[in-house]
Length: 357
Ligand code: EPU
Image 1 (cartoon, helix red, strand yellow):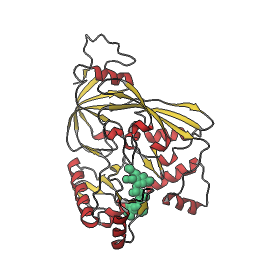
Image 2 (cartoon, helix red, strand yellow; image 1 turned 60 degrees about the horizontal axis):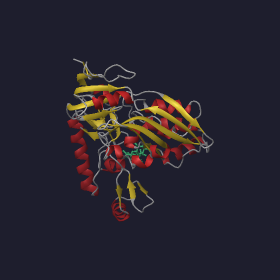
Image 3 (tube, protein in one colour; image 1 turned 90 degrees about the vertical axis):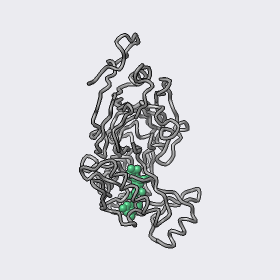
Image 4 (tube, helix red, strand yellow; image 1 turned 180 degrees about the vertical axis):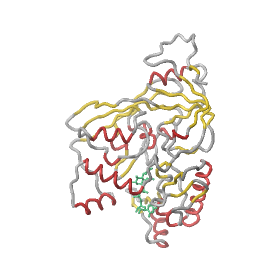
């Protein structure tokens, strides 16, 4: 039964919203894009930074262990959760400023990322088109430093607002404080479970320049003969490429790429090329080499293989899917088997992208 978070005698002002409601025994299947079954013993929805501060100050829940849930696109639930699940539903989008060199846009952490990208493109605030259709919320985007087709969130980042879950203080963090890395940030490291992102601001450089060069986009240039696509064309191309390769979570549960693309030394890469000349690899500036994890998994014969209701996507071996009734345990068993087989053949340890709970 739902019960109010703040005690009746609590004299503090309640701000814009009513007292926080903590719900008990909430099914999480519809709150994770994998569609995995799990139950949150307790769940609270926050709709403003004031709600978050109220939660931190709360006598019962302030000190409770918390799991912050955005769009649930980067989590594998393997069991019911005892932590208080904090569902971020902070909304709102606005153009913060227009200068000669940029548009700065802002959105609440609970906004849907794909809808936000479309909202920016309609009036011509271009720059997020290659990040189209990435499932999840705006608040989760910096946590993962989401990226696609040559652009990462950090390349468009201005700053974000967060609330410290221990002190209740509001902070503004710039890119340096967020410590962005490949599918990584401070929010997956020392700020994990400590800092709740409430709003994100992005800087979209003017004049806009298309980011091409990614193989799939170069193919579109060659196919269409359009060498200088506008941002709407690029958006359409990215949507078409994603739809062709990646399953729509609304139809087939998944969490996008299940593993990160591993980085190896030039020597290790040469050794692999010696045995497997076709290995897809991208030399990096520091001399190391990024390998396509999808290719490695595919080469081990995993496409279409299953463990119970969990499977490897037929068109992109880097994506694990829920064929209907998978448990989180089956997803993890499949992922471990893939890790072992890739390690056995290539000597490379694949690191999962999603958080396993
Ligand atoms: N490949 C195969 N077999 C497969 C899958 C891939 O041979 O089953 C080969 C492809 O032919 C291609 C290469 O591997 O030559 C790379 O594949 P792809 O271009 O599809 O991209 P990716 O490296 O698998 C990364 C990101 C995606 C992002 C795309 C486009 C990671 C872990 N994944 O995928 O991000 O959309 O590039 O930029 O970095 C995500 O993080 O959830 C995600 C979907």
